[in-house]
Image 1 (spheres, rainbow, N blue to C red):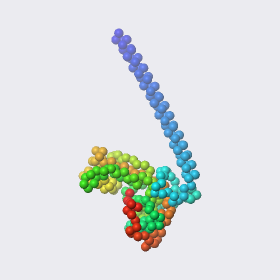
Image 2: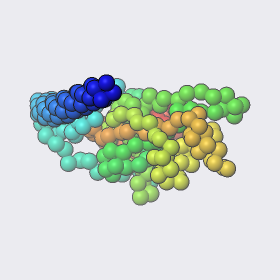
Image 3: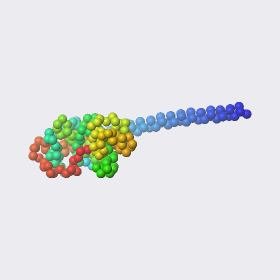
Image 4: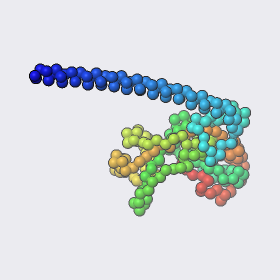
Length: 261
């Protein structure tokens, strides 16, 4: 009787093992099918993007501060062809760009501008990169609040200090937001981490900031940005101001027009 019971159980184990094998094969087939569908979708998407760029005919300078632009949008000239004008355009060696920005505002009206600092991390120099920012902030009184940086998620005209001169880099748009893990945070340079901590209101002295990250009480994100075009009118206004020492007035620029990212 025991032998018969053993045989019965053995048979059930064998059937269970066979079922698992079938399930394993089915799962592998499903994975392969999904991979194939993903590759097909990628190919279709790339073709649609190519057609969009080919038929858009977007003129230089047509990208506004409120535009929603695909992250991989190419810089196009007035004939709809790729533009070679992608290098930084210097416009002044003055310590501050404020006068030139004020002149551009007087000439063109309000424009959303971001001044990049040393905390930009370039994936492709002057074309694509990210800014790390804290999503939690502590006030001087110890009150906590959330921060989302919506300006970094839309299109802006971007300027930066390059080799002792202020330069126009182009129109940049947000290209996605990624959460930063503690492990990735530790790969950032000291200057980047110091800058993020300064935004948060929490000191890094004694490892206070890092301890909050380990506990999950301090969140940090990467705000990806990518160059999507050139606002020719704005660029030319900055260059004109740089060539005209008395152009622009210090009081003409609102703080809302230009900010450090």
